[in-house]
Image 1 (cartoon, rainbow, N blue to C red):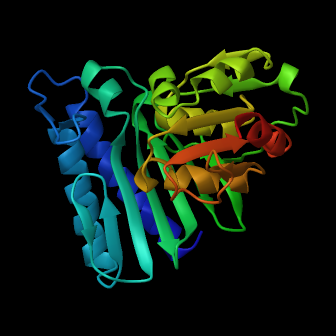
Image 2 (spheres, helix red, strand yellow; image 1 turned 180 degrees about the horizontal axis):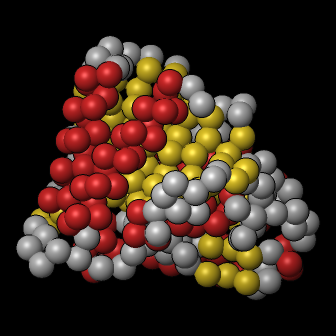
Length: 258
């Protein structure tokens, strides 16, 4: 584990301590942002804590976070989503997590996704070094591999949100695709891509995403053997949409959605 990945894990540890303490709290404070999405005091506290640690240990690095924007100017940028799945978090649903990635010259080179409400499960990857998971805090890591499903009619697809696909003008194509695959579900947020990296589902797609929503997940999927692009086929988490797969099905999926 490189020093950067070790730091990412320590950032996730700090985040988990704050988010779990506020999860299902009776006095959780909830506000609405200018884009009409929700933010809680836990989102803000987690991001502040992560930023403080980065500034202390990597003072020359830049930071890009959901709640407090961009700070610094460097070819090394930490990308933070303090709580991915805030809607779940504020309703007491345990499917949420903290996302932390490091980009160097615009390429994601390290990433961690931590879901403490699922018994301390965590996923991580480094560029060229594979993807891994721990099933609980302190558990031995296991290496991840995407599925080997070769046919759409045997594939399990997560589409995240019908509203997203409808607003993007892709609803007809989504419906047509659901008629071809074996199974379709909307697992949602961080959990979708971890399921894919573990080989438990075969493809996932969504619209309306920012880099902080998917940056570490893109690397985790790729290092598990899969592919991660935009719906239009552009590489990386920078393009506002996401299509992830086991790699085998990727070109066929891109063709269906073109």
